[in-house]
Structures are given as C-alpha cells and as structure tokens.
Image (cartoon, rainbow, N blue to C red; front, side, top):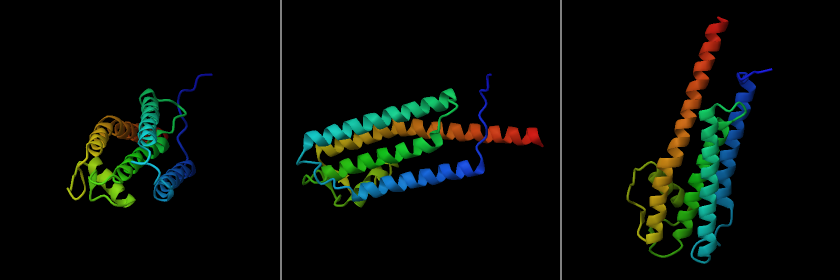
Amino acid sequence: MENSEKKPPTVSSRLWCRLAQTAGAAGLVTAYFLLPLDHLGPRRPGLSWTLFGLSLGVIAALLLQQIGHVLLGHPHARPGLVIPLLMCLSILVFATTYQALAQRPGELVGLDTRLDALYFTLVTLATIGYGDITPHGQAARMVAILQIFYTFVFLTAAATALSRQLQTTLLRRRADHEHTS
C-alpha cells in the first residue's frame, strides 16, 4: 500500500510541537546561563577549541540532515521543531565561545558577562555591529569571522528550509480546504 501523503497535523499536535519547541529553547537558554563554564577558555584552550569545533560540526551536520528532509519531503521529519532548536543551540555555542575568549584580557573589549556574550552573538548574527563590544584579539576575530560564515551557510539555509516547509504546509492546507469546501 503506497501512501506518500502525510496526514495534516491536528491542532493539538501543532500545539504540542510549539510547546516542545518553546520548552526546548527555554531549556537551552537556561542551561547557557546556569552551566558552570568557567573551566573553558584560556585555562583549557585545547578542550575549549575541541568542544567548539565538535559542537559546530555536529550542529551543522544535524542542520544539513533536517534541510535534506525538507528538500526531499521526508514524511516523518519534524524540521519545524528541530531546526529552530538547532539554530538556537548554534547561537549559544558562539555565545559560550565568546564568553570563554573574553576571559583573556584584551581579546573582546566590552564583553564581561554571559548576557554580553549572547548580545554580541546576536548583534554579529544580525550584522548590526553596534561597536560597543569589539573583538580585538586574533582568536576573537577568527570566531567572529567563523560565526558570520556559519550564519551565511548553515543558518541561512536552515531558515530557507523552514520557510519552504511553511509555504508547502500552507499551500497543502489551502488545497485541502478548497477540496473539502
């Protein structure tokens, strides 16, 4: 029996999806602010760079998998749930890295707290660049360049996949509504 058409999600399943998404994002942000990350940075540079690279690599691979699911129309994929959480996680990985780099004097001028690090990450992501926090050290500049590149490649592709999935879902609902009317 071949049935390639997905059943439209019910209101309660969409609500549960949004609730899970919100709880997941809240959990990630809470963990960012509460986890003891003081052992990262200049005290343990090898561990810090390894965790940074592995984290971004795993998140990028998972994002690419979800993007592929959207492009191929995978029937059991949940990109609307997974992609935003992966995007949130990648932002927090960059913020954690900036916070760790800021422990070296002169590396990131104006960055003193985790909120500062998150703020700088989002300002860099949005390409606003207020100038109140600036990467002066070579490592901080390298991470800022990597964040910009990562944003252009992975986060832009993920956002495009999400919008494509949303458009497909809306068109399918409109067609279903017109068919039943």
